[in-house]
Length: 246
Image (cartoon, rainbow, N blue to C red; front, side):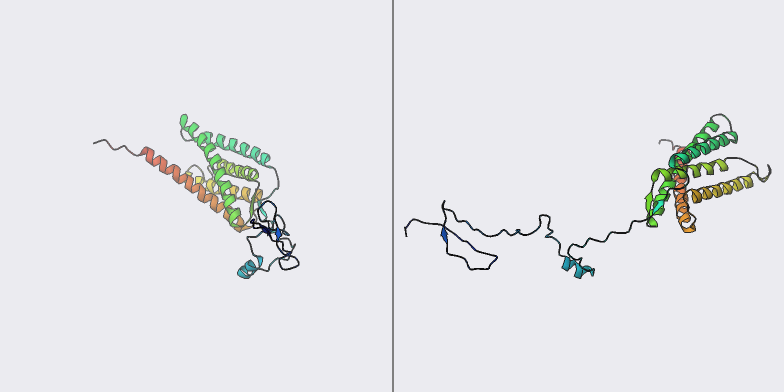
């Protein structure tokens, strides 16, 4: 054997479990190991981070069998379900009711001039802003009742019609108890408007279950009150006398 330094490679048959064979010389002066790769025989998308057996012992859930598909969660029901009329139809109904509410507001305004215009604009504002609070109430109710929300446009159209109907009845100015009881007539009209609103919401959203109806109406009343309180606070701040300097 020559004194020149030689390199050898190791050849091992891993599958047969045989002992390493005699080293063979390697051309090029560098050793080379011919052995199967560590990831050979595994799928390309194999998951090496999770341990199904360990997870089964920790969570108590049975380990899925090889090739068994994961169970599919049941699809939650929709809260806003299709029914009588599409979103555009309820938007048209809401516009007609809003026009009636604007006319009733203008006719029954106690003071003419720009005050009447401001009251009409306030009616439009209340209809639009509380349509939004109504949609928010429907969304919150759907989440608390573990339902999917459903069609947002349909919910907005139905709530728009219900709020416009409420403001129309509330601004009719009909003296139900005669001219001598104006406050009683206003209270009666307000209660009648609430009844019309409840009937519209229950009918359009098919909320014949009182608990589901209570969730929607209760949250809508809460959001309505928050907006009205904000407007009242802003009015008080604007009307507060300015403290003189010094």
